[in-house]
Image 1 (tube, rainbow, N blue to C red):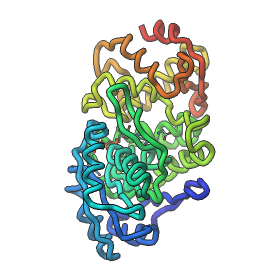
Image 2 (image 1 turned 90 degrees about the vertical axis):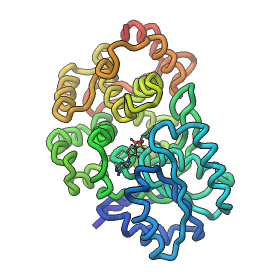
Image 3 (image 1 turned 45 degrees about the vertical axis):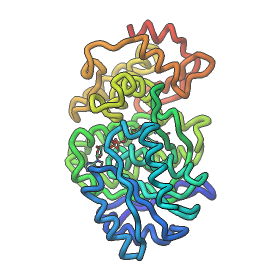
Image 4 (image 1 turned 30 degrees about the vertical axis):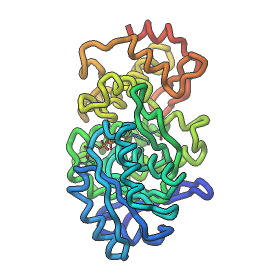
Length: 363
Ligand code: NAD
Ligand code: GLY
C-alpha cells in the first residue's frame, strides 16, 4: 500500500503519495483532483522514453487525454531560452485556466514545469511526478520553482505549490548510479539538519536502500518528505526556518555555477560537497565537534559520496566563488548568511558572517 502524507498549507494543502507502481495507477489519484480534463505532461527525453506511455495509458483509462511536451534532459534546460520555448509550446495547446500541468521527471523538469505553471495564464494547477531520488525527497515538495540565470542558480522563479506529489519508487529502478548518490545527498541533509536519529538509521541502512530495497526506500523518502513538509508548513516562503533546507547549498550553487551547470558536477554532488564544507566551516569556527565531521566523512566513504571540491577540480577561483556567495539569495547588506551546525542534527542559520573571514578560510 502506498503511504500518504499531507503538506498543511491551508487552501494550498496537498498530499504526497509514495509507493511502488504508482505510475500505472496514476489516473486514480489524478482524476479526482483535476479542474478540467485539459492536462499537459511535461517530461524530458530520457524519462519520456521510459515512463510517458505508462502515464498516458493510466490517464486514458480515466478518459483523460493529454498532450506531452518533451524537453532536453539536463540542468541546461533550466534556462531562460528553454523556458521561453516551453511557454510558446504550451500556449500553442490553447490551455485555459482550468488546465493542469504534470511534471514527469527529475528536479529539472519539476522546477521548469512548476515555474511554467505559476505564470501560464497567471497560474494554473500542477502535479509533481518525480522520477529521481533527489526530486522524490526534495524538489517536488514545497513549491519552489524556477530556472537559472548566468548570474546564478534558481535566481528566476516563484513559489507555486503543486496540488499533488505522486512518487513512484519503482521508477528509480532505471536511475543511473550517479543520480542515486546525488539524490542521497539531499536525503542525508534531513538527518544532518535536525534528525540525528535519521542519520543513524541511514548509517545502518543506506547500503541496502541504495541497492534498491523498496521498503527501505519508501520509509526513507516518507521520512524525508515529512521533515520537509513540517518546515514548509511553518515557513512556506523562506522567511526563516526554511533556510535550513539550504544546508550546504551556498557552496553547492557556487561550484555548480563555476562548472557551468554541466555534467561535471550534478546538483546533488555539489550539495554533498557543500554539506562537508558547512561542517568544516563550523568546526573552524569552534561551533561543531570535529568527531561529528569525522563520523560523516566515514559515512561518505562508505557510500562513495564526493566530499571535497578538489575531487572535481584541483583548483578553484576564490574571487569567483566569493562573487557567487555575494549573489546568494540569503546574503543581506553585503554580509553572508551560511547554514552552519553545532553537530549532527543541529543546523542553524548564521547571519552576518564577514566576507574577509570566508575569503581567508577558503584560501
Ligand atoms: P534531473 O532532473 O536533471 O535528472 C537527472 C537525470 O536523470 C536526467 O538526465 C534525467 O533525464 C534522468 N532521469 C530522471 N528520472 C529517471 C529515471 N527514473 N530513470 C532514468 N533516468 C532518469 O536532476 P535531479 O537531480 O532530479 O534534479 C536537480 C534539479 O533539482 C536542480 O536543478 C536543482 O536545482 C533542483 N532542485 C530543486 C529543489 C526545489 O526545492 N525546487 C530542491 C532541490 C533541487
Ligand atoms: N530545497 C530547498 C527548499 O525547498 O527550500
